[in-house]
Length: 166
Length: 179
Image (tube, rainbow over all chains, first blue to last red; front, side):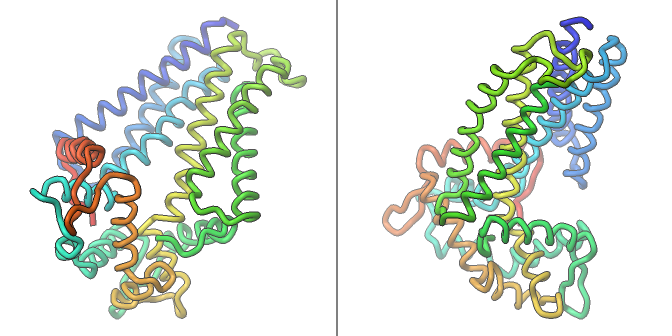
């Protein structure tokens, strides 16, 4: 087995990961994307297959090909939390708003900008749209997908004794 | 393959140690504690990689890597990815996730159903939504991103840099205000 095979596989993984990130920036900048998480996942899935294809093309053996694909998978693990911090973090939004306001904001002004009932209504809307929750007679109940998400995290919270959180 | 296997073992040891720590003592800065546990496993990984044979005593020849340094570095990258993108995110979601907290509140409610008003009052194990909001503001202050000045919150230099970076990224990626 060639000693260069591992380097080739890892390089392929790095290059295709960079392509996925560049693709993410280009697509999101040029098009108003509705299914953002799905699009991002698809981009990294494409990068994984592209790495596989590159390794097959360059005659890299199976185990080293797996290494190359693992690079993309690990990059995905690291990139998604970063993306969600940019896209969905309320704390980040607060910093942006406080910075944008000349003289800053008082706590009351911040509360005025973010009415709790509107924040909650918006989040319920998102949860319904994503299929985690459904509305019945003005009350919200979990779907199967919602329960599948909630239960493992309840177990983690109990195992790590995390308390209510949120 | 040795690097990958040792990374998996290191990650498993890391999460077991975190579990033991969280159950054995009351930890106030849990994310920092997790980071220390992870950092402790890094020299363990390096030592295990240096001290074990290339085939770990049982790997077939075709899975033995000739470039030991590259394989070791790759294993370390996997180990770090599993921690920062895996276990630490599981903790962050469980401890701070807004949507997840709503799902858990509904799941734990009698009858498994909540109205929006119920949720606003019950959020975070009965602490209410206002608590969540205040917690985030306090978090920004303790992280040094904003500071109190004459009764108003203003961005520090660090906060201004963060606001420019994230605001710029949000604008470039066409991401609206999160709810």
